[in-house]
Image (cartoon, rainbow, N blue to C red):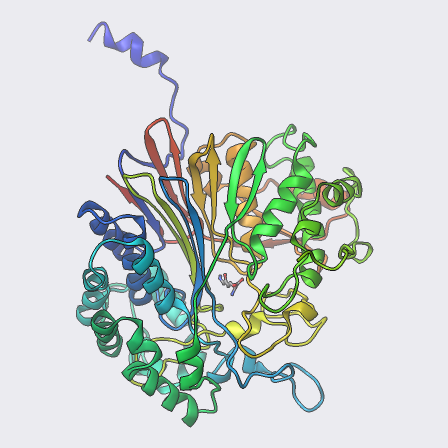
Length: 552
Ligand code: DON
């Protein structure tokens, strides 16, 4: 005892916020049952992709506001052998979609892009998870769906946050009979601790467990879904479903301060934004005044403002428009952006225009991150778009439909659900992917996995990922601190600097004095991150919500 005591005294104190640490493998997701389902797969010899499939289906049951069968998303994977891939299972516009489909006779946007049957794009999740499994998984498919089936069939306890979010969406559920029956407990509110059983969803999942995506896109589920669409004026047909294909893309690759970065290519606007903003910041010394200082926040906000101006014009589905990726990320353009920033004054957004590029050389959501013992890492962001998507539960099928069509440019210059203004490249066209902001990202150090992360939050996603990343790389925070730290968001238009609660009033005043119009918000994003360092995995789930990080 006499020997130990002095030793203990010299150990540095642990910072107040600690990540969850594990040696072998880790799952970080928004909901505990889903996290456990993934962890069980990893413990029984499955790899990170197997676990991602199990978590994806489990979240479709336990986190119905965003976890889904009726939505879409992106899966970024980096394997121990250095290969990397990006599966784009984003929704697509139905064949019958038209450019002006959400405008009334006076040319005004209607509510149809946000709620009801017509808001839904052709879902991609089931085919996306199946392709991930077929190409990169190793465990039996049916076992990976087993936890989801059990959670739907036997039920699970409603948490405080779930009860609250279900209540918050009662008005839209009330419009659609199956949503009302299931998510409104037949017209009553669910309370924390109640057991939520989803029998229809359990049957749908059992069919997918047995027949794979064939059931969803061509079988019984497809038949029931399209019949329901037809009865209710929806556009999705059997042909649309049959036709849905996942696109495997090269991850967008870049570098920052010697770290490698793998991130989301178009149809996400996230990766390009992340790399452009990091490029603008690199070498400026913006971090020197310290995390949370008005000077550093100002530089971040100015980089954000400039990227979102570009986003409004140059981003869309790469299968339909030529995205000037290399122009947006070119050294000279990034330098010009950097030079245009006044370190002391906010540039009014109306003075910031999207860049001009030569014709190009030849976008409630949830994120989860998984690392396995072999060194493979998977980052998945998938979504119904708004919380509970279009609010519609497909009749007899138990799953909610997305309202991803609202991510298209409904009308140029008109803000969408997230207030972003978008352009021609993102106009509605049959079979096109709406532009996304989802930004699953993996950072490499010396060619090895260092940090993987992502978040929901519409356009704020890009800026959330940026800030967690610089919190680790520039401000030297541990991953948990980096995730917990308050965040800001600027998206060019409206010309407003959104700041989470938690910044000092003095800092806010300094930013106002620089010319920023500040708006305070309760919360921005829900990050799920894993960092690998010194033989340890460090997981951080966002305490803004009920996320969980567990490993072994
Ligand atoms: O793909 C996108 O950018 C949006 N549909 C994401 C929506 C979202 O993150 C909502 N979450 N809070």
